[in-house]
Image (cartoon, rainbow, N blue to C red; front, top):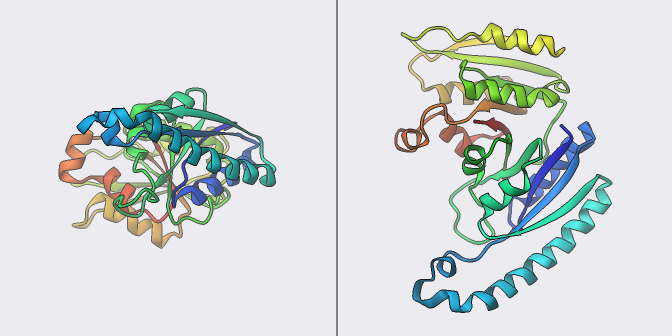
Length: 271
């Protein structure tokens, strides 16, 4: 993992994103690419009530704000002693980040701790980044203090293509973890997941992992996983995202949606 795409935006989640990127860069020797996207307000983009007429003035003001934020982040990057560069985009945040991340190994973005009520609240873009590109995404909780690379990792395994993609993308970080737990949640009436395949795959990469099969016992899969994260003092989770259609998960809930909303630890996601 040698190239990290870091979303830069002056919001309440920026510090946790920065710290996660620094932790990974120091552990792996990765280069950080800072991606800042200057976004027009929705009303201007839609040209409601002639809003586009104000676009040049608004854009100039937004660029001035972003320029100030860029100077502050660049000074911080220089103090941290990591390799980095800067890329600037204009327009939609998701498309701008995905465009900048085409040759990256990981995107670092924020998992907001609640609905967006002001410009200071982080954008809820992790789901769209995960579904919109082929680069794994590290969703960092807004309140996270660090990313414990050498901590305890949990691989949520259900035998799906999404889980396989997440596992493959996480190998460089899993090699550095102190402990790796592969967890499956058993569902009545369904075939057992080939969890031993995941263990064999990890073993071939020199990673020792422990397998844990947990029954649902009347609880949802996401509830069981959340309990395991707490019981085992897990530091970060690897999981496939949106194994069902996103519409179905939005309407009926789902593992991905619940963990994106409530996880206390970073999630490394792939689709």
